[in-house]
Image 1: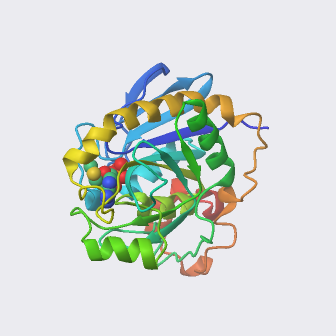
Image 2: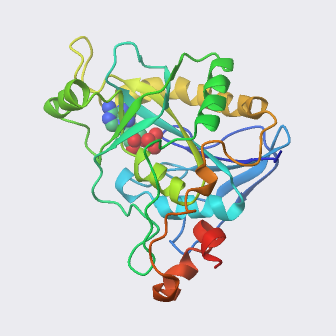
Length: 292
Ligand SMILES: CSC[C@H]1O[C@H](OP(=O)(O)O)[C@H](O)[C@@H]1O
Ligand SMILES: Nc1ncnc2[nH]cnc12
């Protein structure tokens, strides 16, 4: 049995969490630059927590400019084992209504202007990604959401768009009717990919704020509509986080899904061909397998 350390990445509307003992905002430097903000660390019911607001306090980073690699590296560097990502999203399903939470289990990645890997020339790696989220952490998040009084949908496909503009009607219909996506947002990727590369368990709670623009009975999404739902969603997300430690339970140290061993057979570059500078940058993310 092992104690986890939980990293919470707060999305739009979630810029802090309450109730941490020994709370401290810590600045963490990474070889990938500065994270979105300082990271709030402390203990919640005896469980170590680290909270990072994805857009920074005051919402300063646009989705395309979020320093995703630095964020994941910084959490790993602090000792985080499990990342709970909290995000606002639009819904493509009538039954996934504003105010509901969707525990995402699949993605369609339509982003194109972001660095998506820690690896590259000089150290090439290909992690498995057919099941992009951690089933163990997702289940705990779903239980904590239900305990917080929220309607929780277990499973859903998140379409990650580049943004920052919202979708056209044609795009919204394509994603919903042809591609079968359930929710849409601008930040789920490459965050989930990078968490897998860093051997972190990752679960995503997408909080529905709107019906994007496909729904004939609702106005097309705009920021005002998002904000109307965001305040309640954000309070519910903070309650979910407060309930999370109670739902982690006694757990085996090794992740049953293998998230914590994702790099075991992933690195292709021969040891004598590896780029020393890149290997050094990978100290936190891949030090376990690179011996960096
Ligand atoms: C304010 S609406 C668009 C904005 O909100 C979502 O952010 P996050 O995923 O960090 O909660 C969405 O992805 C966009 O970045
Ligand atoms: N409809 C939508 N599209 C993209 N990101 C969102 N975040 C919240 N609602 C959204």
